[in-house]
Length: 198
Image 1 (spheres, one colour):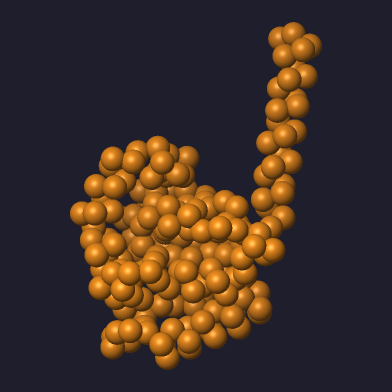
Image 2: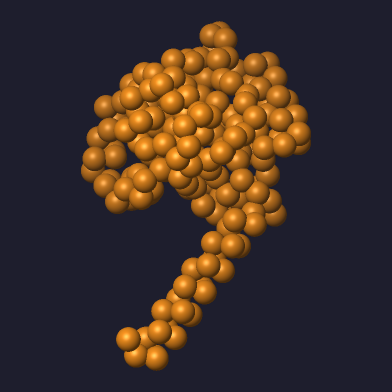
């Protein structure tokens, strides 16, 4: 390998590492709301969100695979980890957005996906997020436009494991399959039924 090629590779790695460090230094939020492809697609539309990573959290198995989580029994939920710029958006706004992109009346799955690994949950990181999540839950309980009770768990965050590479940005990589899945699953129809049109 030539010296010039080595230098180019080194500079490229430094730029990637620097970009990751900037994203990693930003605060994050972890949400479960059924299929992580759909949650990722929804949150990436939100101004102030820097990055959304699909993954798994809440279980006991270290570094689980999609196959293990989707079979159930590991305790993990499909989640997204949302990195955001607090100068543009705060955690309270993320919570408000989260509620309107899930079915909070179910704790046995979401939309067409059934099983504990698809149930909705807010994983709070630290005391401040816990207090804000509790306040958000109380506000939604007070203002929700439907009668069913809320069944979303507030859980302390544990380890977050990124999902396999083929799951990341699935809606961009496979738009036809993704859109067909989302439509067939009835996600948007149910959200409109619950929350009306935003």
